[in-house]
Image (cartoon, rainbow, N blue to C red):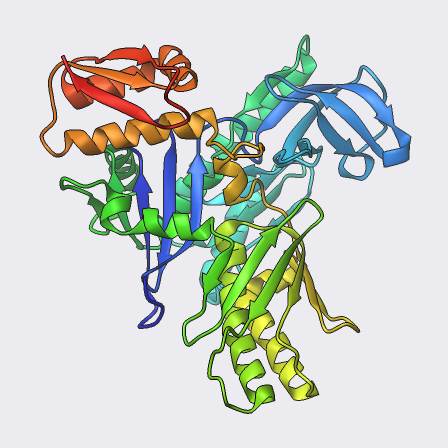
Length: 466
């Protein structure tokens, strides 16, 4: 997909398999991809029990329900802690790679229109609200609602809500906190107290509430989102259902862009290319001219290729969800002016992320350029591939890949009784997932016979008419 043109963004939602994939398209180019397979979510509230105090890390290990133990820093909890103590904690960072779940004891319960922070004792209205009359009205309402030194932060989306709707939202969030407190008072075993909205659902909801275009491939997901808009009194004109013989991501060329986002080499428009090599300790990026504009002044060419690379590097970092230390080896620039332009281009491309998520180190004495980006879950590569030498797809990803391929075949008129031969791992996944069998049943009108074939690996399959 080409870059350029008037800024326009839309979400493409692939919900035909067990996982949801949500692609953000900006200026006709894939910018971000979220993969939602369920499981723990950031802001889930748990009742946990401290299993070990770790003074050397200024933290405690907390046993949780259904997921590995989490780390609770001492400075993220009010009051003393000791082994065996029951605590209410919230997931502040999901586990990824070899890092476990990080927890906080400072609870923030998020709703559609507000965030409730128990015992925070403050009220906050959006800065964008300039109408002094409306600001005073909302301030008076929240002052009347506030109990038990609650902290209440009103979201921008709620500025046009009725006072009754804001009251209802507060009561809903307050009930969740009271449920958590009751679980603490009756503690007997770790449990998930309150399930938070997944990051994927937050992305979809924010986009829809802002009136952004959203195209959905998957009947159940389309119906769910249309119901959400109806419940909130919003128009569904910008919500569209994908129809046709091809899957949505194939139809919009997103599958090709995902493949490109996993490749180590990215060609630059106008000439040159970058090589991206993520490793455990850091991500190394090399800028190459590759004969671009050969014959021109070397310094001018280096600056121009580096500036093209700067925007593409930031785009790829976001798309691939790469975090941690990033070291760039740009083309050598002798002039201070050229290095300043490159630095400004990187900073400009990151934009609001510079407020906390991205820390710029700048040029080193060896001419390398460094920055660090806060990790936000698994990278795109880690979401799809197991950590093995030949990098086969994860069983979950392979299972969903087979389901998507089979659904795609059905849209070209394939129906009836079939035998589906798959790898042993996918066969076991199908046997344990009733929802997957239901997808196949809906696809063919009758459930196919599932056969494990030792000659098939990963997401390979064979579909034969009975």
